[in-house]
Length: 229
Image 1 (spheres, one colour):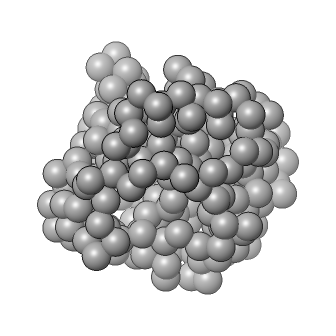
Image 2 (cartoon, rainbow, N blue to C red):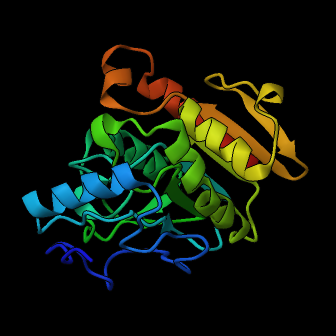
């Protein structure tokens, strides 16, 4: 197991590490050999980083679940909290604060005191992949953890998928046919009664720099998901 990073604090971080055999993988998960090898390489290079499957973060009674792609190498893989320490987290957490889905201040550190309200964040793939690109097989292997995480949320009424991979992973975890619910930014789907799936382009630096996703576009989708709960 990697050394716990210096900025990790169980007292200040809102975390929901569940049963390693169910909603969260164990720290030394070896189900995906390529990801495990990459993680071990990062452990040797940066022993003070988290360098483990990144657990979900947020409110265990959440009505909204946000599903991202995978931890960023110098973001969540370094800090141990989804979307913390990279550019995507700035837009995501500032927007959640704006809509009352988070409290406190986002300061790109796991001990910044930020708390999510009625919201939880997880990833389709829990380990950092090389070049931020998990393979389809890795996404399928990790899908059992996403499915278990969804089941673990008794009040869940909405899911916000950030990008096509998160969208597809969410549908797979729900046992829904992808062809019946095509991904499109701003789209909303009803994959099962009482649950609405919202789609957004990923809030990555690339998408925002190219104008594919503007802060206004992102706020509109988050606002729609907020209204749905």
